[in-house]
Each structure stands twice: as structure tokens, then as C-alpha cells.
Image: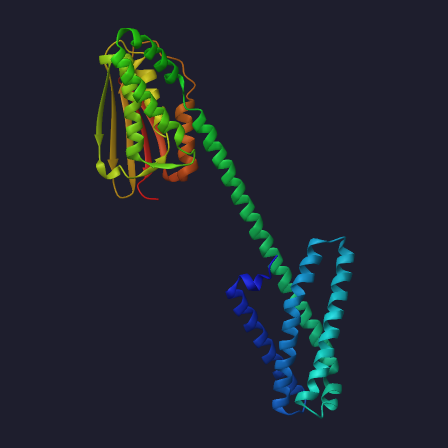
Length: 347
């Protein structure tokens, strides 16, 4: 791990400010406790603190190693004490070598301040150890949160893939059956259906599971799907659109609307003996886009039993993508079924 102060400029400035403050406190203490030259005491304080701050920077690496390789609480304490004794001892030796350079008659000052220096070294080392343990703890928490966020993203992406894979593929088999029939009765129509089916499958399979696409692309895919179904159902199936063009650029999860149209065909067109209209209405405002897919149905027909997986997966995908900012609601009354999606109009 790189030294945290190298990675964090703001932390480095805080570190320097803390040592300057400690130097000021040390100078004030020595100035009032000792009878000495103010310039000598000031130089002594600045040099002592500067040397210890250098040792403190190096201390990060053995501290990090000790934190990673704990063999036991007691052993860890012993290692910290030994590290502190070595650090303070080296610091005192270095100051002892430097002091004669700034104050030739240093012996009196040295004897008068040695006890202070030892206590000062213990205090400074303790502060550094506490600061580093705080950094290590914060870094560990940051790593843990990053790992949790990454895991949450992986889980979310996997769930999105699973939900998208649940999109009902039955229409594909039905469409292929229809193509087979049309090749005999209407070859031109079968070729048209194959082209539309190819375009639809290319859109469905070429997009990434977590990809966001414009609403215009989703509506174009829905039109392809409806055209394919119209080949099978003919005049029995009628489509209508009321689209606010301002909403066409709004991004949606790919294939989000497909289950709504499959639901409308399965529970509307399949079950009815008369004409069934499937209407798409898109409304736009500054905050949200409302997409309503509605269809009439035969209230006297025997309902086709379904699992509800399509609409449930759509609701879950909305929740995963937008949280509480999006919703899917359905209503069924007086022969009209509506599926209503609301998504935010901005990211």
C-alpha cells in the first residue's frame, strides 16, 4: 500500500499543519520552563519536530506490516513498544548530533532537557501510532465499502441478466410456425416476416444486458414485434400510438417494454374473438415520462393462465435501475387492461 499522505494532498497539508502546531507547542513549553536563548530554543524545536516528522513518515511502513501480520494481541503490543523505543532512541541520537551545530554550548541545555525529550518522544510516537491506526481503520472501511459496492453491482447486474433472460420467447416459436405456413400460402409475406423477425432478434440479442437505450429504439423494437404478430393475427389486431416526441431520447433498460406488449397480445388478442386494439401512449414532463400500454379484452373469454413473470421482471428491473424514482402499475376494468410505467425524464 502506498503511503496515504502521497495519495491525499489534503491529508498532506493537514499533516504539515499538525507538525507546525506541535513545534509551536514545544517551543512555548521550553521557553516558559527553561531559561535559554529564544532563537536557540526556536531552532531546537523546529529541528526536533522536523526530524521526528521524517521518522513518522517512515513509521507508516512497519506500522502497516505489523497491522497485517498480527500474531496475537500481546505480541503486537510488544512489537509496538520495541518500534517506539528504537524510533525514539534514533531520534534522540540524531538531535544530539545536530544540536552542537546550532548551539556550541549545548551541554547545559541537553542535560536540562533530556528528560523532556524522552517524554516528548513518547508522546509524539503515541500520537503518530494513533493517527496511523485511524488511517488504517478508515482505509479498511473505505476498502470494505468499495468491495460491498462492487459486490452489490455484480449482484445487480447478474439479476438484471437473469430478469432479461426471462422475457417470454414463445412468440419466436409461434412466429417460426407462422413463417412455415406462409411459405406455402404466401411466400412474399413469409419473406417480409422473416426480415422483421431478423431485425427484432438482432436488436434483442445484440444489446448488453445492462445497456440503456433511447425510448425511440424500444418503441421501434415494439413495432417490429407487433408487425410480426399482425402477420399471424391479421385484422384481428390493431395498433395505435400517441407519442410525445420530447420523450424519445429518454434512456431505458434494453427490452424493458417487451413484456408489456407480449402481455397485451397473450391476454388480449389470444383470448378475444373480435378485434383487439393495442395502444401505446407516451407522456412527457420535466420530471418524468409516463408510458401506458393498453388493450381491450373479451371479458367473457376463458383467461389464459400465465405466470406473471414478464411484468414482475419489468417491475424489478425498474427498481434495480431507478430505485423509487420509477414504477410499474397495472389496472383492469370494464374490458380494458393498462400497464403503466413511470421513469425519470433525466438521469
